[in-house]
Each structure stands twice: as C-alpha cells, then as structure tokens.
Amino acid sequence: MSKTAGAPPRPSKRPIRPHFSSGPCAKRPGWSVEALSGAAVALSHRSKVGKAKLKEAIDRTRAVLGVPADYRIGIVPGSDTGAFEMAMWSMLGARGLDILAWESFGEGWVTDAVKQLKLKDVRTMKADYGDLPDLSKVDGDRDVVFTWNGTTSGVKVPNGDWIRDDRQGLTLCDATSAAFAQDLPWAKLDVTTFSWQKVLGGEAAHGMLILSPRAVARLESYVPAWPLPKLFRMTKGGKLIDGIFAGETINTPSLLCVEDYLDALKWAESVGGLKALFARSEENAATVARWVARTPWVDYLAKAPATRSNTSVCLRIVDPEVTGLALEAQADLAKKIASVLQAENVAYDIGAYRDAPPGLRLWCGATVEAADLALLTEWLDWAFAKVTAEAGLAA
Image 1 (cartoon, rainbow, N blue to C red):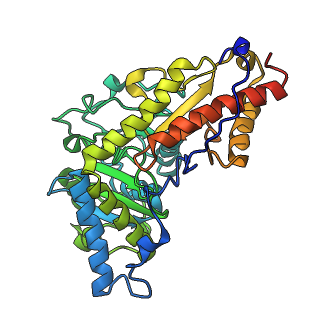
Image 2: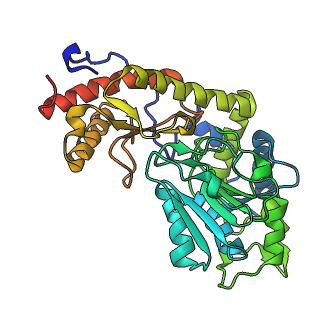
C-alpha cells in the first residue's frame, strides 16, 4: 500500500474460520467432532468393521481422485514422509536418478538419496525459492523424484508434459499439497504420495501411497542393496503384499483419523467431486491474486504465473523500505505481521516456512472459504501498516 494513502482502518469483520495453516490445514466447512461419531473406536483395525473402514477410505480415494483401476492405493504410516520414503527405500537404485529440488521438502528427498541411501548415480537439479529447475533436462530413462507442488515455496510444476510417455524410469511424485487441488496426470506418475492433513483437512500421521503397474513391477523385480525396516516392506517372496492395498495396514492406524478422512471424502463428493475441489481452490487463490494485484507492498514468491500454487500461496514483502532492511530484520517484520494477526484471532500460522525466504504463506485449499480469505486481506493491509509504523518505516 502507498505510504501516502494513510493507514487503513482496523477491519470490522474477522474471518469466520481463521485457519490458513499449510498443514494441518483447515477442516472442511461445517465440520464438528460429531463427524467422528461413527468411528470404529475400541475395535481392532483387523476386525471386519475396521478393515471395511480402511477399504472404504481406499475406494473413496480412488473415486474422488479418479485413480485408474489398475493402480494400487495403500494407507501407510508416517504421513506423506513415510509414504514417500517407503517408495524411495524400496525402489531406487535400479536405475540412475534425477532428483529435483526447489524448496525444503525436495531438499529433504535429496538428502535421503545422496546421504542416506548413498545412491551412486544421482543427478541433482536444484533451483532457488521462486523458480523451477529446467524440467527439459530430466532424462526419461532414469528414475525421477520430485514434488508436484512445493509447499514451502508456493511453486508447482505447471503440468506433466515434461514427463515422457515412453519413459523407462519411474516417476516418484510427492503430491501432498497438490492432491485434490491440482490435476495429476496419472499416466505420467508411477508413485504418488500425499497425507490426509493437507487439501482435505484430515488428521495427521497417515500417508497414502499410490502405485502404477510399472511401480509394482519394480517392487517385484528389484531387491535393494540395503536392509528395509518392517514398515517399508511391501513385498514377500518377490510378490506385492496385496493386503496393504486392500485395507490391511502395515501398522495400527487410528480409526478416529480414518473416520475423519472418510468424512472429508464424503464432503468432497457432496460438493461435486474433484472438479468442485479444483474450483474452490482456484477461487481461493484468485481472491488472493486480486489483492496482490492491487497491493504494492506484497508479491508472489513464485516468479512465473504458470508455476504459482493454488494451495500453499507464498508471498514476499516488496515494499522498498522493508527490502532495504537486513534479511534478519525483514524476517522479523514478517513474523510480527503473522503474530499480530494470530493475536487478533484473524489468521493462525501464516508465517513463511522456517527455511524459506522471509514472508507469509496462505493456505488456499478447498476447505478454506473465499470470503474468509477476502476478509484476511483487509487485515493483512492493516497489520502491515501497524507493524511498519511501529518499526518507524511508515509515514
């Protein structure tokens, strides 16, 4: 906002739901603890009822996401991290690897491949926050590991056109902040993972692992050189353990969390399925985009419009007086904006990720309401004016 325009008035209305965290994310509209009343508590997950709940979660996931019938879907421990590391530890090493990183979680997969698995043939392709690596350099004859949507940078791949249809390697895609909000081209993806607590606002600790027939073939034909923990073992006697992908989980899941995920999936179906979820996320992101377009003090961290996330929208402060400060002071100012709004019960947990450049991060997934985001933008202008004035930066 312009320094000559004067400070904006304190907004009179707060968002109804101030939950804009990028994980765990906002619950679906209308959620209450009563949604869990049908949970199979105090029953074994191996009981008839428990297995039926887990199988229903898999079947509804397939239906909502449009996962092909010949792809396997499993519920696994450890959230998205557990699901993705299961795939990395079980499948990598059979071919050379191209691994992409442009934000914190992608960097984590680089660490796993290079420092933990110590793979011999790895090409690491990195980009700074706000950019993507050169996707044209990815070799389809090698395996590739990448995040579809960089949660900590707000940078996503624009599409899957860069992935060859005749590839010989496997594509391992961390889609945790993309699933249910961005179009995932299943024919391009061999391993896809996500967690319940992202776009559908479920509870934490459980991950989803989706495998193409090509990924299953890798599991059944390749034995890695390193030992696999029990939680990572998906084959027995050279064959896939089918039960994992039919509701027979490797470890004990929370049936309360399962019930909550089922509730979220049923809500997704009730509002119109995947297309409606896409539309909700797009309208939320557009609400923020309209504010960014008219607000001089803020801009996107993602440089190219085609790569800007519609879920984890990452923003940087571009006001010249702020950017003229030392980086630590910029970070402190951004944190103060987030703290002021949290104290006002307007927005919780909207600071940039700890490893990301200073700024703000607004979750715009389908469980957030556009009207709440519109109100939040008014408070953001007010908080920016307040904090900069207190820092002696505003006229």
